[in-house]
Image 1 (spheres, rainbow, N blue to C red):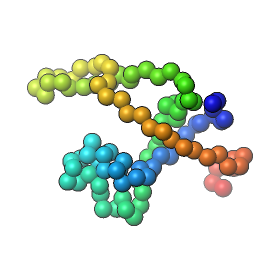
Image 2 (cartoon, rainbow, N blue to C red; image 1 turned 45 degrees about the vertical axis):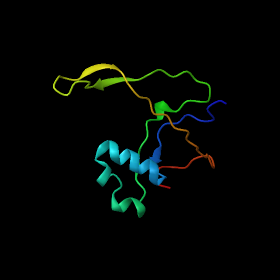
Image 3 (cartoon, rainbow, N blue to C red; image 1 turned 90 degrees about the vertical axis):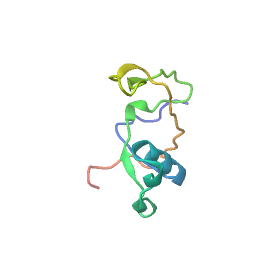
Image 4 (cartoon, one colour; image 1 turned 45 degrees about the horizontal axis):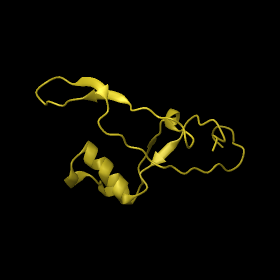
Length: 100
């Protein structure tokens, strides 16, 4: 598949309870992972458009800071774990002016 359009920006949502819970555990703790408002207002966040690739594209392991030993400073290197998702998007129409 090829990219049908240039993706300049997008909003992503935590659309499943399991996904929202897992993200909440990463930022908080299991007891407070799923905030009460999630059931009434799905959480949207700014997605990184540069990470959208067509099927079959090569990817590389990202680098960042990790702290293998709590008592020592962080180190920079390849990530230990890699999360990837299948996203589905729909393009309807030809676009519109800002605010319309």
